[in-house]
Image (cartoon, rainbow, N blue to C red):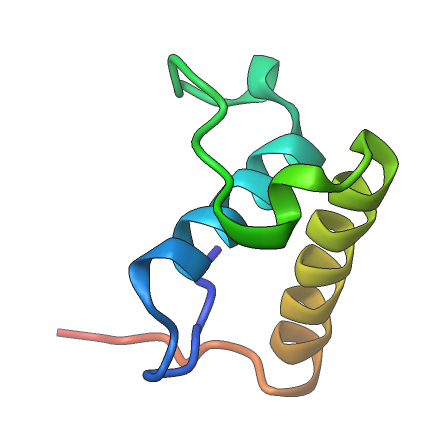
Length: 75
């Protein structure tokens, strides 16, 4: 699955979003060794808030794929 982040997102925000996605999916389902790093205000959020944020991003990605399916690239 591919996530599209706006161009104006700095690396701190991108790392925090990745952190929330890893928390939402669960580390046992991934090959990551660590959870990632949260920067800014997200580091003060509760586990539930982080999970909800990650779930919201996953849900929005699925909605985009349902409404505009990825095009199959043929050689």
